[in-house]
Length: 394
Length: 79
Image 1 (spheres, rainbow over the protein chains, first blue to last red):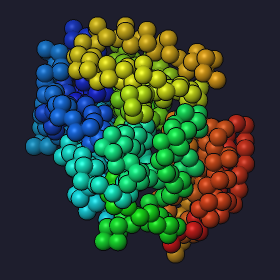
Image 2 (image 1 turned 30 degrees about the vertical axis):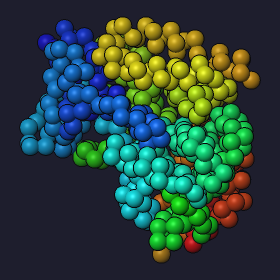
Image 3 (image 1 turned 180 degrees about the vertical axis):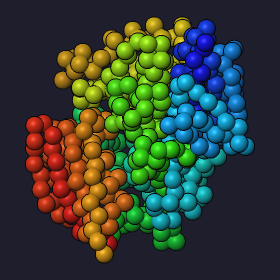
Image 4 (image 1 turned 180 degrees about the horizontal axis):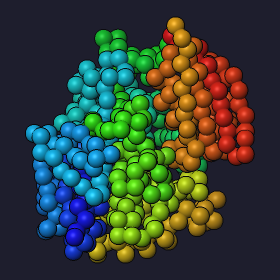
């Protein structure tokens, strides 16, 4: 008898997991409310480079033949009775469940947020909103362009500063840098929250004349006065504003409810991704509450671990992150760490930027053909273990 | 109004770091609430101290127990 695996979500985590399961042993069903899988990191280039490169593919085209795909949202999950109820009422029974529903921005925590997004856009939600950012920076000929981290968590820890670096480069390339101030505000003690990576990026901000405000916890946006106001009453004046939206977890009803945190992320073992209290249910990627960055690489590595565990192997997560970081002007770095090692001080290089772009170029192939790409990634992750890199980049 | 006690477990977070978890709890808190954060990242102690100094909230306790830092904060600075 084949084991029935239900995967909720056909994004990076869900699709990679499904494609890593041998179909001789598993009957795999992927459900997603959207017919499309999005390569979310590309929103950055839609917003700050005006890229028109398509950033989505049909989920079905990314799954191996033999995997079932149902285009439907999941309405509820009953972990005790091993049932998933789809919107429309159909019920799926499973032997194993993997929740990979990601995270989504919320605009309810910050006053005036939704109106600000309608006006200036953002680059953590939709292509349309990212296109609005492109319009905003193109119409700003003088004044202050502000990027504000609105709250945690959000997808891709480097993304706020990537936007800042690309915006600075944009205004300089248009010859407007002496008329446009670029300001970055964060609730943290420093521009990048993890100290070692901050030591890499803070000098670049200074060198490029980007102003930054720390300990700024955004409370509300008063667009009629063009100010962003912190919880302690500090005001930041702007002419165009992009807020990094705080994200929340799944909107699927899950029983028992105590596996969820207050912001609806699912609690799980950080090494095995087992949902708290369940050996037949897993959560991978952004949807989980495990203490690791919300990023595609996490979803990818967790998907591989869960696929191995379903096949009886005692695979465990190392907590590895490998977040590509665009520093502007063709430079990049990677935020590399794991559960046991702090973030590496990887210096800016053209090579890291190229690696980011190469990854974007090969992304769809990587999702579709894990049998070809897994050995390549394994070699890469082995060569770039944080403990090894920490000896080189002190 | 009764005060809430918000417990935050930020142990094991290297990137983006435990300070992000404190900030998240702070956003959802109101004046008078108590936030208790546990973290293992060694950078957490100076970060909490700097955060308290700049935001004007109150640090009730900051202790270390076997490699885990525990910070107990009273939210007082919200306008």
